[in-house]
Image (cartoon, rainbow, N blue to C red; front, top):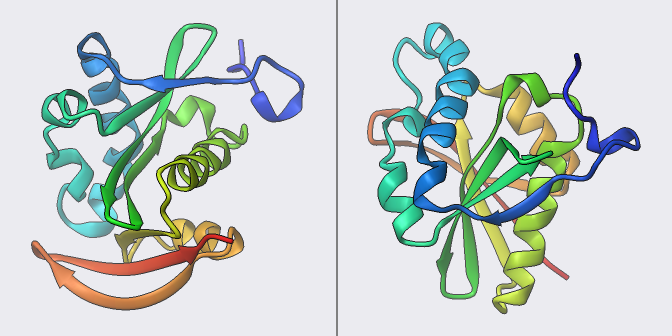
Length: 160
């Protein structure tokens, strides 16, 4: 059976602060979402190395569930008047359903609620599909740099 499709009339995802009990599901999403990039990058992507237990404990992770099952998540880190969108990951079974865009909209809603005027993010240079999506959603490239051994593209979006 295909996954629920929030963009085409199916139940909308519920987005909530992640809890310690979500850790296994989040780690599984990370593995499924980022493993395909290993061959392209020649190493594990940065999100596969993160401490999700610590991020959950710090209140940085929001999980999107569809019919009670984790389908994606987003990691948001306040930085004064800027919100860092540190990671957004969608379980591959839910790609193309609008869930990623919904989580990115959630980031904007969260930023505004926290009084932030800007969201910044970064992605690996080989993740060209991410750059294309972020550009379509109004993010602009600010610079490129190597960080922790990763060739990254940094992008930002000013919020109105």
